[in-house]
Image (cartoon, rainbow, N blue to C red; front, side, top):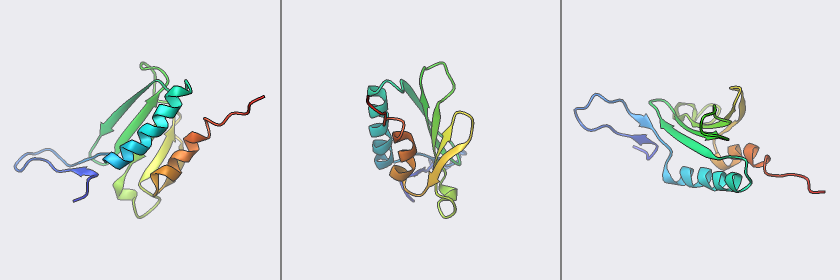
Length: 114
């Protein structure tokens, strides 16, 4: 069993859950910290569901998420288990390497200076 799935207690009826491991959360939180420092993001939420784990990013707490960083282990051998989904539901980037997938959001930090 890998760290990305949490096993239920023996005899319980709870299904397995997909979760981000420590390394993945470190990569995500590094980007999150830089975006907060830039004033772009203000809040986040983490969901561990049966088929996927979601890290949602908010500009304000009461809004819909600006972006969702999703982990779907079942897609590991197809399009890749990581994806970044925009507010409108469109997949902005998908792949097997989390750092590569998150580069689509890092471009938001790059601004021209006049």
